[in-house]
Length: 311
Image 1 (spheres, one colour):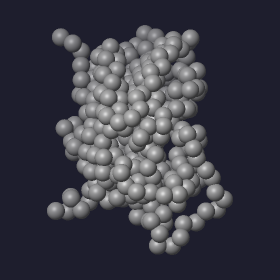
Image 2 (cartoon, rainbow, N blue to C red):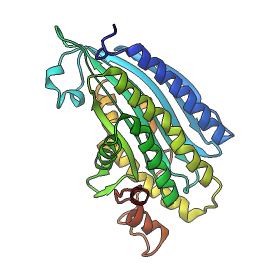
Image 3 (tube, one colour):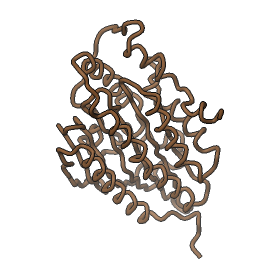
Image 4 (spheres, one colour):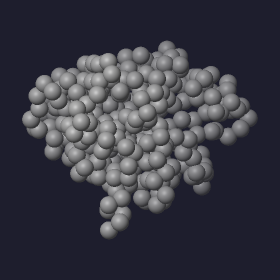
C-alpha cells in the first residue's frame, strides 16, 4: 500500500506542465492576436524550466506563465529563516507562476502561483509542503468582478474544509500588503504556504483545485472588461498604480527572493514586472473620483462574499 504521507514529485511535475499548457491556451484564445513565446532553460546548479511570455497582444500588454523545477544541496536563506533544521538538506522546488498585465486599465492585473517543495534531510523522512494562491489587482474596480473572483476561490477550497477559504483569504490579505504604503496590493484572493496535513493526496488535491480554478476566476472578468472604452486619464492612472505592483514584488515577494537567492533564472523571476510604469510624487486622487474609489472602496481587505453569506 502506498504511504499517503510520502510525496510523489513526478505526479506534481506532470500536473504543473499540463496546467501551464491549459492556462496558456485559454489566455491566447482571450487575446486573439498574439501567442506565448516558449523559452526552455536549464539551471547549471540543477533543474530548469519553461518560460512562456506574451507581449503586445490585443488584450495583454505583457504576461508570462512559467514552469520551473529547480534543485540544490543547500537551501537559500529565504527558505531556512523559519526552518533552520533544513539547512544543508538537499531540496527541490517546482511550480507554475503567472502574472498577466492587460492593456485596458479596466481589466485587472492577475497573479497566480502553485508550488511544491520537498527537502530530504539526512537520516530522516522527506519534508514537503505545498503553497500557492491567486490575487487580483484592479485599477478601476467592479463589485461583480470582486465577488466572482472570491466566489470561485471559495468553491475551489470548499471540498477540503469550510475553514480553508477564510484562512487563506485572510493570509492573502495580510501577505499582499504594502507596509510602507499601508495599503493592500489588490482585492486579495488566496495565499497559502507550508501546507502539509500529513496526507499527500489530499494536499496535492487542494493545490490542483486552486491551480485549475484560476482560469475560471479570471477569464469571465477579462471578457466583461476587455472592450470597455478608456483614454489617457485611465492609462496614466494604470501606470501609476502599477508602481505598487513593482514595489511589492521587489521588496516583499517570497518567490522573487527565493528565486534570486537560489540562483534562479533572472529573466523568468522578473517576468512579473510590467512593461511600463510610472511614479508620481505625492499623488492624491481627486475626491469623489473613480481613482479615489479604488483605495476607498476596493483596496480595503473586505469580505466580498459577506452579502452572499448573509442571505
